[in-house]
Amino acid sequence: MRSAKGWIRLPKNNLPECDFVDLFSACLPRQQILLAEPMSRHTTFAIGGPADCMVLPASPIEAAAVLQLTLRQKLPLTVIGNGSNLLVRDKGIRGLVLKVGQPMSQLQRDGDFILAGAGASLTSVAQYAAVCSLTGLEFAVGIPGSIGGAVFMNAGAYDGEMSRVVDGVTAVCPDGVIREFSANEIRFGYRHSVFQENHCVICEVRLRLQPGDASQIEATMADLTHKRESKQPLEWPSAGSTFRRPPGFFAGTLVEQAGCKGLCCGDAQVSEKHAGFVINTGQASAADVQQLIRLVQEKVKAKSGVDLWPEVVILGEE
Image 1 (cartoon, rainbow, N blue to C red):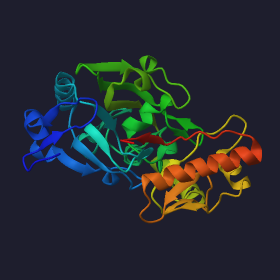
Image 2: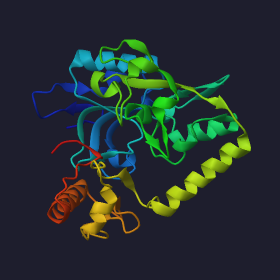
Image 3: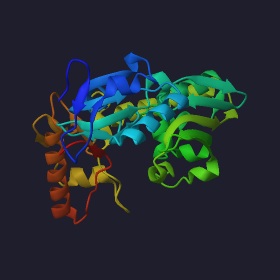
Image 4: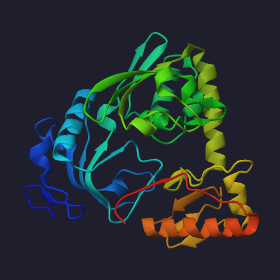
């Protein structure tokens, strides 16, 4: 329960009572502390119940202070970026959500390097690189999400990948210690980085790019943008590709062959433009999406014998 002041009683698992405003105002401006914040405002699916509290640090120092307080208070913590691969359940998220977002999105050039706040959108960083006549990040234009999230999952497309351009990362460890990671220490793999294991919060990303011709960079980005817009349902809220690619197959093709294009549960629909996407056509709930995912999995298994696993990350109270 929340009072006018900001007390939250966390009802499960013997979690403590906490006045989030009093707790975090010691290290954050009040406008960076949000109570009972609808997660639908913070995911590209436009779905999700309320978070008890959300904080938006603007620097590694602020993020470190938040993590130290969270550890001291033994609060449950969820860290998100742009929410581009998330489905938050309808009851929302208990405890604290730390969002690495707009307050931590500054961009700075240093020769052939770009230092990007982890909350900057991947597209904005790619566009900034083009303005700086630096090549190597063209593949990233149009990929939804933040650059911090892109490093976290080693995002890639069109023969490009974050592992090829990341020079280093500044992150805050769960105990609140700020640490620098070299490219080798990040241990990139297919859709993988060390941050999926060590639970450090990515705050800044250092990119190593190459000098290039601005007009050619912009032309490449325009071509990739056209390809995305023509093939993907970018006009609808979604979490991007809903299913992981099974070895030897394309998820979208399997979904289409199973007759699932256009299949609906409530306002959740398998896109008719690209069967690999589940979209929100109106007021879809997380329950709608989860029901549709299960239905597609069953139909694909029955048709092709292949198991599909969600790529989208599902969070929140059951």
